[in-house]
Image (cartoon, rainbow, N blue to C red; front, side, top):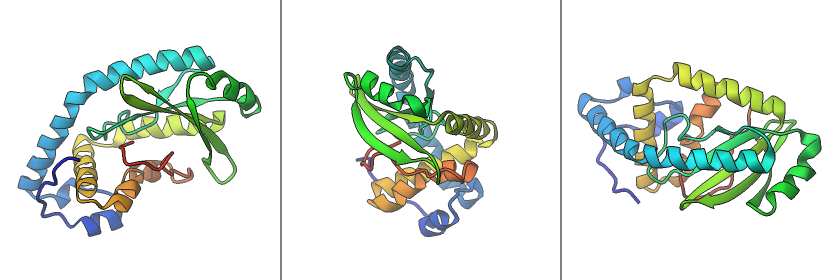
Length: 206
């Protein structure tokens, strides 16, 4: 686990607010956050390569185009990041999907996505990176794509830096419940109608 950096941030206030404003940071604190964020980018080349390979496999196995729905896709990953990909898959064909994926991935279960819909979740390892695949109902995948596009278009780089620094501080200080909740605040902010519960609960990043 990464060593905890000293901080003057009021983490309780930030987690209660459910958003990290760059204005909450002193210049010195934000400078440390920038340095940390830059250090996370050294993992990008490898994760891009693994994600491309995983995408090729998922297209072969399912016939559907995946999208990165996790923290790496929106630039909020830590060094422990796995990959979370999603596809829109017809609900009436889920038995077919289960059969197609049975030789390639572990089935992690069916989870609620909204109050009326669910998704199937699978996992496999590729180059020592865990890849989670969520098969969402097509209408949910459309909503997720719209949300991810909005995050990409409107979340500023200083906000990404601030969010990632807070996530790191929570994780490295052992505040794992707060850390698990913090990983989801961006999704909840931009798509509150979805049930953004970590799938499955684990110590790694999403």
